[in-house]
Length: 342
Image 1 (cartoon, one colour):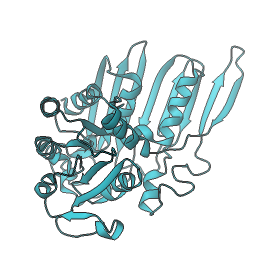
Image 2: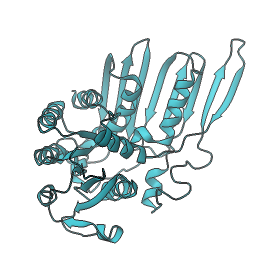
Image 3: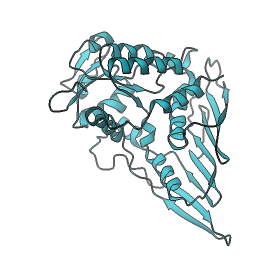
Image 4: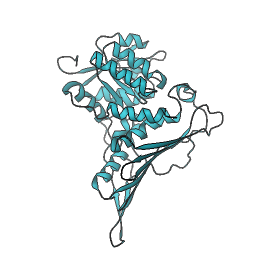
């Protein structure tokens, strides 16, 4: 890595909307291994209110031309990820790219080849691997208490019955719609556990009045040993169902979506505040098992603390100690092939 002598990685953000303000800047600012130097703000200059020493560039090109910046966070609209990731690599920067990484697997492969050519690293911002609720799912699976898994459901629902103001999500352009918005979260969680499916079947829906893009999707993924995984998301769910439902030969596990980090960060909580990453009370998962005599046992499964700071730890270790980043290129290609499939 082309880092300073004290191994501090200088970083810049390509946007300072919700993503930059909530999901990136607080972590880059708090982590001892990073120096958050600059951000791109085309009109409103808000970043200096939160980080008085930050440089606010007027354009992506200005930030990419800053020779001191080593890591660029590509958190611009979905349809611009490929363009901006390519430009950053060509300027000799490592990149952290928001989901979806690109619109197509061909674009992704081109960027992988370019990164190898310029000897820079690509990191994928799949923060939901570090959610508290997903950590409890992995804990239950690792315990073996369910026995052989036969069925798993993951849901990510919202209620937004009107067309939103963000054109890159609502217009019929590359990487728009709910599938490309929330699909990468759910698919990455599945792929992180099970890998590439043997087969899959995808259904899309358009239910809101005048919508130009999908606002519903459901994907069934088939794995070895008769394991079936279903991922579903809808923008028209008033009363959300459980986010995680697992069934095995010895029992079931049910868990609400309960990770608190996004809500806490939006409310202004600091990463160092007591209670950060801790789920609200009453959100624990329920594990119900049955023994050979037919006796049922219910067990409350408390969630681990969620921390997206672990994602930035992983980036730092990859840059400074060449430790492999947990979200791999192969993972992302599997995800993109499912997203782009007809």
